[in-house]
Image (cartoon, rainbow, N blue to C red):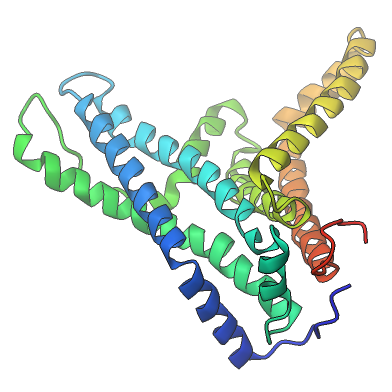
Amino acid sequence: MNTVNQTFNWSRFTAALRKEIVESKRGLMFTLIGIYGVLTLIMILGNLICIRPAILAEILAEKVPQTTVAMIFSLVVMVSASMAFKGLKTKASRTSLLTSPSSTLEKFLVNVLIYVVGIFVAFFACAQLSDLTRIAVLWWFRSEEFMVPGPMNFLTSLTTAGHMYDSMLPNSAQYLKISMWVGVLASAGLYLLGSVIWPRLSLLKTFAAVYALEFCLFIIVIPVFIFFADSMVFLNWIADFFTQGTFGICLLVWAALLVLVTFGLAWYLFKRKDVISLKWWK
């Protein structure tokens, strides 16, 4: 078991943070360049299909880019979180990580700060820069037939993507928009936990585990719906659950609990890691 102390010292924390950034700077740099390049390409290609005066021009110019960025953001967060504890992959890297002079708490917070909090900030910075690049590249080709929308605020991407709930589930819409942000953080927690449990091929293993669990829940829930399909009381309860706002509240509470559980469990299991064994149950 890891015997490093669990205290927190700001000087040690900043030193550990600098160490991780310096050692991983090439990977971090290539990741940011990749995010910027993909977003720039998508935004330029997306703008090229915005033809005035088509009735869909405004939607294509605003709704689609925001929704697309939100989807890419969710994917990037999962990939980044799954890379957080790549230092546990080999015995040599575990020795370097676990025996460094910082405490286990400081090591954990460093990885959370870089690969979870950091990617939140870096992604939207790249998105805004990509949007400005789109304008710079296409501005000279604008005309009455070809529109080049001005700068967009991608910090509202998840909220904009959630506007579809305004008409579908008006009483739950506000809760669902908030739960989308909390849900992304919960997703980061899941893949952060996966990075601690399975440092090797963490993304694939966590993805498989999450969807295996969802499939099992699906198998359990479907017979319940079939069994109560003829019950008007049950059907009315389901209708009220989705239309009266209860669904949005429950989803938000579930996402918040998932954040607490996944980050807490990731921290607990990371404390138990040692140089010799990767087994999470030890």
